[in-house]
Length: 134
Length: 345
Image 1 (cartoon, rainbow over the protein chains, first blue to last red):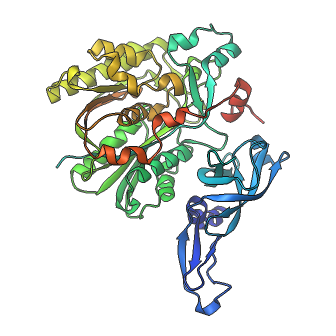
Image 2 (tube, rainbow over the protein chains, first blue to last red; image 1 turned 90 degrees about the vertical axis):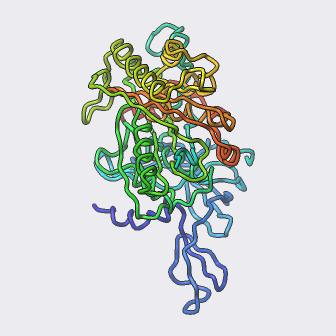
Image 3 (cartoon, rainbow over the protein chains, first blue to last red; image 1 turned 135 degrees about the vertical axis):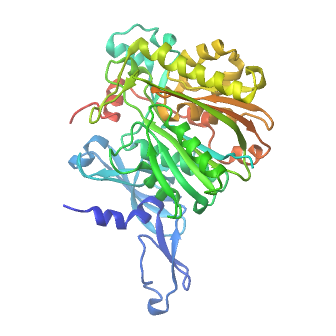
């Protein structure tokens, strides 16, 4: 079982999209990297809290989900490009008819999953359309 | 030194179910909505709970006055639908708004008034100069058993208030509480839905406590209802706050801006605090607001609030209560049942 420590370690990046930024080459990383692949030992890494606004690069809609997500179908999973550049996979909360490539999205705080009825609840970031961008 | 509200934020989910849709399913009279003065209520999304909506409200409060979260020395989260029986809601809220970790946190429960109790706890620490800022949250995704009278009103919403001494947008001039042991509404450990005493929740519950707290505060402050520009009373339905206001000598115009229950339902720990936020959304500097919450079990906290010039600087910097009335999405009973986990898969 326990995935609790793994979830706990990811709390800053899941709740607040905390990644890293290399001051030397100005590259942003999400999920956070401790070493900059561009600058290697000369890198100057710092934590960076992403604003969370971004653009849908591509998406798929899930109609047949695993048991944990069955209640949520149909739902959209998208690759989102954050304003600073990094891309991440996230759920976009809107109807499958509404989601489009190029759509602007913003972050919201939601339940990502639960370890059954007795385990912990995973909270974190999902995305919703920015009004008027559809 | 005066203390009060430095910032506030609310969050109400975008889904609604109409009271007449619930009445249709259970074969109740169509005029149920008019009788309760509740026409629709908010419904959380499948992946929303009292924690997620508290985080959204708290983030709005932080944003509204550009608060540095490191200044927050206490978080009290009031709810009767904390997702965990053991594991605080407040710690998740704190982490999600980016607090420094040198703070005290606790969850509160007092039916619908845990949010105002959280305000009082923060006010105590702030006034005693023990902390710089305190965050008080009232949040609920409340439960009503299928077919029960509560199902027409039990809604979801959260309000967050940042309490401090500097740059206050509204001064809390004084408060007065009235509390007794009155079992008008309860939920036992492990039970999914609360029980209530039906009509017993009215006179010995809501009216006795709200009226006692209100009269107590008016006497303590030496004020009369006419001294206030606005009044907010806890809103378990649309009838009780209107009736109690009338009995206490407040006018319909005073309660109108804060009367949000006909369109969102009873948001429990969020209810009177969302009503206060809707009033702060429109109040002008110098105006006074009377607030009285009610929590079954039972108690009422009454507050005398004076709006300050700083309200104009912060008011428009986060969504207002009525912004959450726009672009709502209506659910039928079946989808509502799925959202609320009433269907067993």
